[in-house]
Amino acid sequence: MGKREDIYEYIISKKEEMADEWLERSTGSGEESVFRSDEKGKLHIQHDQLIETVSRIFIEDNNDFKLHIDNWSEAVASHWVKSGVTMHETIAQFRLIRGDYWYSVKNYILSEKQGFSIEDAFYWSNVVNDAFDFIMENFARHFEDAHKKILTSQQQMITELSSPVIPVKRGIGILPLVGDIDTYRARIILETGLEQAATQKLDMLFIDLSAVPIVDTMVAHQLFQLIDALRLIGVEAILSGIRPEIAQTAVQLGIEFRGIKTQATLMNALERYS
Image (tube, rainbow, N blue to C red; front, side, top):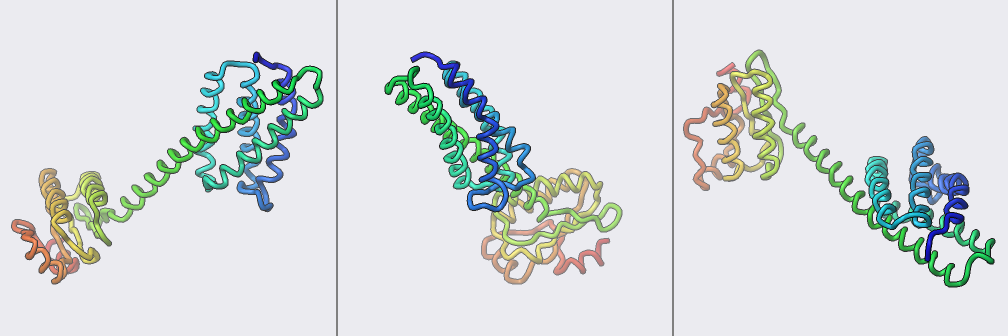
């Protein structure tokens, strides 16, 4: 049906007004607010960019519009996720913005009746709705990706912090293991334990299992791998804290600790070897 630069120019002239109305509802303490009031400046810029990008549907090719939206969505989704906004709240915000946007377009069409037919009104209504549908779908994808990245980063940080190598004195460190050890955490323990032992230039590492509820074949295999890898870089490993019930389970599973130095407690290990 062609382009409508007049609608584009009208919407752009209204973007500040629309931004102010949206921010009034979305920041502060109202029922619809989800953002902190000190974020208004950044949110205003994001809203302006969205309005400018959406309005491109009136003046340029659809593919160009989608490219601009994808870039906007990727950047803004990351910020909203870090601000603690949920997907439910995100959908509600886009509902508000869509409503404000179409209200402005509709007002312009009604004020310029001579330049629009009923078919024109329906056409641009569909175009605007399709545009916002695409925006919400595209934003949801980037929102989910950003959320996964943060969760993965947090999980990795928590896991790494749960298996630190603690230096005791020059050349000697302790790796206290706490809680259940699954396949993922076992791999992190192997990687970080080896890296930290090398970084700290250790000659001896005490691996304490006092707070590990169970040692199965998988955990034992990872421990053996860690001990072998440590040996290759010149670090001797001593296991401590293997409780009687864990020792019994290990025997039943056929797990052998031959060739590995063990002590009943970490205190005993430190007294004997350090």
